[in-house]
Length: 401
Image (tube, rainbow, N blue to C red):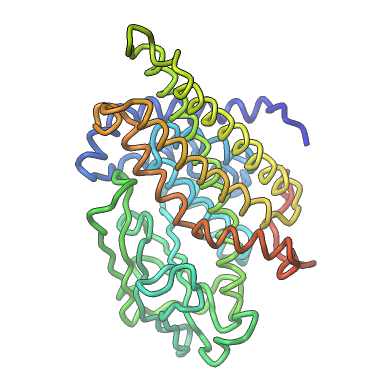
């Protein structure tokens, strides 16, 4: 593994950094305070190519690798988590599953729309009574002539009101619920205009207030058979694949949040004085800042390793899960210490660290709680699970033509 970033990587860093500084930073404090999502951000991302970063050029994408995707997520979350969520959902949880599991017809139809921003993608797995317990979903898909009728409700869906295309998971055969491979679940590509699709916002969130989060209701929604993704009964496999990509982007984003906490704390510690000296002279403040830097380096190395494995087409569920667990845990710790370094001012939105503190908590919950990540790591260590031969992985980098 080469730790030297390429010219392509540095160009992606500059692209994402300049976008976040120019478009997100000036509005984020007010948008967070008002819990307001700015839909125009999606158009701006599409215009500069962020929405199609790691898809082949033949589908209108940027043709960059998975490390580039991670670096972009780090830069976006350095400014605010809500900006990074867009890439996690649109690319990691909607676009990449279509690219990897879709038929040529599905890829030709949807990927150019997703990469150009003509469609925004979202991911519908979680339900009011099914989060970590994926097989607890209640959404049904009943077979009819030419397709399926879907009924159910999805909850905690990022970009719910903004999306035009939803990857929805539903039971096609409940008799297989207790089978080990969960082959009764199927994934469906559901367009907003299919009929019977309604969405809404979730209010009163602790963090990521400038991001769109809500629900999706499906009421006798007809989905044509050609919109089954990955084949009947392969929905659980598709969903786990999706989570691998989502967790990678969450890990890289959380790394950016750690860096934001570190930079804010260093600046404040060097200017704020107590007992006639800058607080950076106090050893306990130094300890907190040193821990933030260590957390950043550890987290960055973990997600870069996972990205390198994705580029090589190497099974990376374990590495990605570890990166997600550690980066999110370190982000929570860094945000807590950043508030502490800022003292009473850290308890106010006069400084961004209180927003970092609220946003950091979400990362240890979504895309699989930290408890789920610990179970995954223990499972590999104790041989309860392993990356199976023949498991469907991302294509190697560069993309196969």
